[in-house]
Image (tube, rainbow, N blue to C red):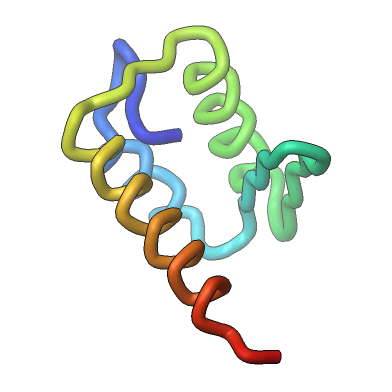
Length: 83
């Protein structure tokens, strides 16, 4: 959900924030989940954002670099963990 051909990451973020907390999408190697809490308006907004993100994704360079940095930091922290 870092951008679509119709909306930028910021526009998606603003749309989801405008209906309050309640829509979370998690995708990993083994886990996929969509969690929705709240009113019907929240569900509609989440569903539209998810559909656009799955059907018309874009991968802006700045967003890719941001996620890459987060992953690299996580890997470094795991490597430095003595536990």
